[in-house]
Amino acid sequence: MNLNHLQYLAVVEKSGSINRAARELFVSQPYLSGVIRSIEEEMGFQIFRRTTTGVALTETGNEFMERAHRILREMNEMRKLQDHRIRGLRVVSQYSPFFMRCFLEMRDKYGGTDEDSFQEMSSEECFRALEAQNANIAFVAYIDSAKSRYQSHAASFHCCLKEIFSNVPFQVIMRPEHPLADRAEITSEELMKFPFVFYNDVSAVALLKRIGISGHPQIVWVSDRGSCFDMVQGGDYLSLIAVVGKQPVKREVHYVPLADTLQGLNFAYSVRKDYLISRREKVFLEFVQKSGVTGQTMIPERQRT
Image 1 (tube, rainbow, N blue to C red):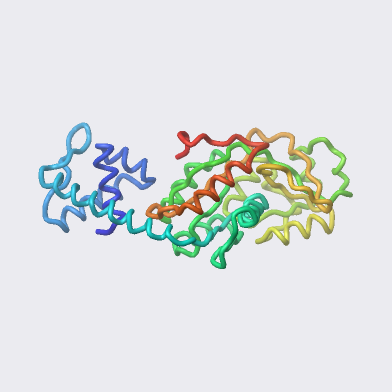
Image 2 (cartoon, rainbow, N blue to C red):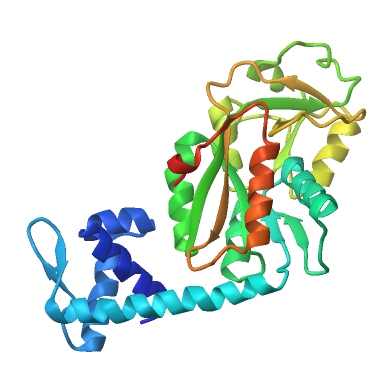
């Protein structure tokens, strides 16, 4: 039994249902049932009484949960002690100039520490960095049809996913002298006529399939944003980006809207389930949300999951 398990029990108690609690925690119902059963076996008494409509605390279970809540409250108070010093912003992100720009502007406006760090990596690496506690906040992106898969994937790393922007439109990026640079918009069929460069990420195949270019004959996969932009600037390569916030001004890169996608990209941040966000990290997340002012729908606080 650990603190995560006590938190699981608290959610089950509040919801009165293992199924509802499992959905809220983004874990499977059999896994959560197994956690409850193992704790009951460890303690030597039944915590929950199973009924036809859900679960209810036994008399001994009620006493157990009173003590469990005291432990959880004390742990939250101990974690708050971290806020008495300035905690570094340790951020990882899928490849996006927007989040890097927010990180730099946040430090310029409010000051930074020598513990601050920002790294770009694949979505899989983002979740692994959170799980290993090498980062405390991760930003990931996904198409809407992959949302539940990303939530499950985050949960497998003991992380939660909270969407902040939805339906961010795609832009095609190219050098300013590219043959398509004078277009008002570009179709997926036109993307197939030029070499294409994109990030080697697990979400890439689903995204390109959604757009209709998964079988592109001249695609090159890269693992960092620098390589992508170098190839775009150095030839006739095209690539895609979902521009959150104000479109960056880059003389060496030209942006043209992608014409025929039915839906854009969703962005979310992820943290470990047992992680208490510091005041400075809350300010940073608010800064990110306020900076995303054009080209997407911001998710209201009450609707975030």
